[in-house]
Structure formats: C-alpha cells, structure tokens
Length: 202
Image (tube, rainbow, N blue to C red; front, side, top):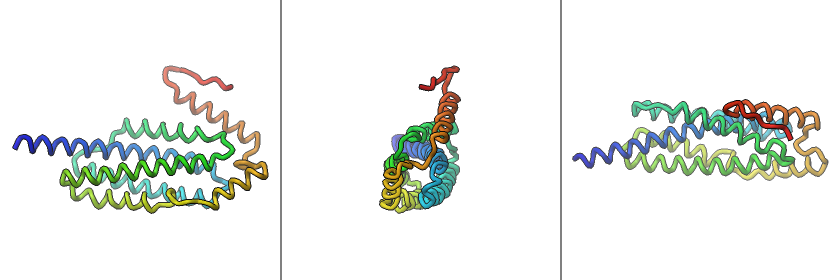
C-alpha cells in the first residue's frame, strides 16, 4: 500500500513539474513571437499568422493553469520570468541577419516540435497517473500545435525573402533603422546583465 502511494506521489510530482515547465515554455513562446511580430512589417501574412498563434498560446497557458489549479498547484513565477527573458534574448540573435525571417522560421519550427514532444509526454504521464480531467485539455493544445500555421511549409514567404534579397532590400530596413535596432539591442542586453556588467558595442 505504501509503495502504491509513493508511486502515485512520484507520478504527480513529475506531472506537476512538466506542467510548470510547459507553462514557462509558453511564456518563452510569447516573448519570441512579440519580438518577431515587431519585425514583420514587410510580411503581413506571416505577422497575421503569428498573431493568431499568439492568441492560441494564451489559451494554452490558461489550460495549463486550469490543470495546475485542479491539482492545488500553481505555475512557477521564477521559471516563467526566466524563460520569458530567454525568449527575448533569443529573438535578438537573428536581428541583424539579412535573412532574419527565414532564421526565425527555422527556430520556430524547432520550437513547435519541442512543444509537441512536451505535450505528448504530459499526456502519457497524465494517463499513467490517472489525471483524466487533464487529458482533453492537453490533447486540445497538442492538436493546435500539430495543425497550427507555424509547422506549415511557407514557400511564398521564402520566395518573398529571396526577392527582397535580390533587390538589395534584405529585410527592408534602412541603415539608420539597423543602427537604431542595434542600439536597442545593446540597451536590452545591458539591462539584462547582472551585477552591473555592461556589453561594449563593437
């Protein structure tokens, strides 16, 4: 009997940790999408799809919170904040690339597949632990990730990027705009540096 109780506690612990991790990853996704949407003025269709996916992500966060609440648990504010910061910094990594939109699409594709794997795992753990009420909510999120726009091939977007590159427009940003964005990046990185460390502009 004691062994059964210990196993149940262990499965619930793994399930709760997984839910908290997924909650934090969704916050990271929000941060990534917010930064990417800011730079999609020349790709309105892509921006519209990302905005739609952002709304889906907010719903996914609400479902995770609903499951955690049903277990008398709550999300980890530390993990949410940390991964939100990681999302902001990760988005800066492609800012100066002439093919920024393509690099972002590759990263988004990998990120979405990571989320798919995470929700499949959560469903398996939930079934093992007998958390039946959570399964439909997790399955709904999994279906959204599997059939969402982020995992679709986007040849039109790729052709548009190629056309802009051939014309010398790249991401369509002027030199002044790139310098302004570089200054913003430096300020953001400096704000994230602990203990007063500063990043020098090269």
